[in-house]
Image 1 (tube, rainbow, N blue to C red):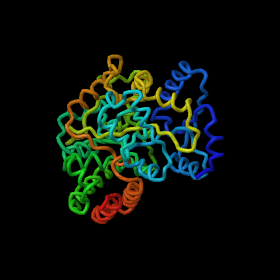
Image 2: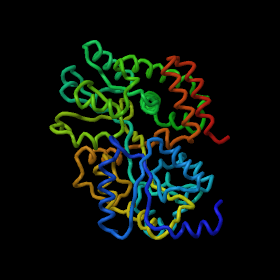
Image 3: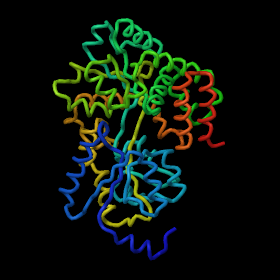
Image 4: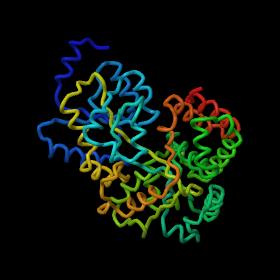
Length: 400
């Protein structure tokens, strides 16, 4: 821990540094708009932003060097456990109480921002991860109504028909194993249901090894139908190809819809559409971003003002409308939002299950092990061996 003198000197630091991982395809334009609104309202407070490609590692390094940013973006829930256990993030319960946030934030993101009875983050969005986007004309060309595909196996048959007709059925970026983990999540939930996913990630993975193997066999079959260079594609590359009509479908989080809104002559409902990943009706697989305050970073009035702003209706209305997500507060009107997001919110209201993506659902160490297992899977394509590896990987994050 730093000395009292160091803490006192740090506490006098003015201005706010925001460290984040938002870039092209995931909020660059959004962040610019939010910071512009903050500076307009609080011109006396200087805000700098620092973007990191390897965000988590950079933040941990700065914490160890006792030079953390004032605030930083992180996924909440179990992803924050190591920070909380190390005393590296600040208890901001007083901000929640003073602003009456418990009454206005939606339960899912609200509870995922609480740890050990304390609020440790400000949730800023709700993303949906079980989307399948499709090009309307290409779906019509192959004679498929995407809304009538009932489960992952039927979806596989559709993709096989696309392949037989000389079309790429679905772009599948594999450069980062996280995108393959996301596909696996949707296949597993689509095949076995959200309760089984909860059991896999938080209760008893060993009891689901046969289901894991079956889901991985489907992932393997889906992978066979990807572009030949899929191993070199990242999320943005694959999305660009989808927009260029080089594939019929694209499975990804709703953050991509914020990008599609900027594409000239590419209109939702006319040129592209969206359905739930087959088999996941009634399920809203959530991703949530939050902003947390670092300990030992000179928490003062400027940082508090910034956190209160990013949790306000004014900031969250702008942030989510541009980013392609729905607000985590119930007191924000969506009347001026794109039809896509209005429909997403209506689906959120109708959903019965709200599991989170792996980054929130399991511990960071378990997530690393899961991604390692999928990296190996890309190389050896052995569902049985990977199922065994995943049982062990998920088990590392479960309290016994």
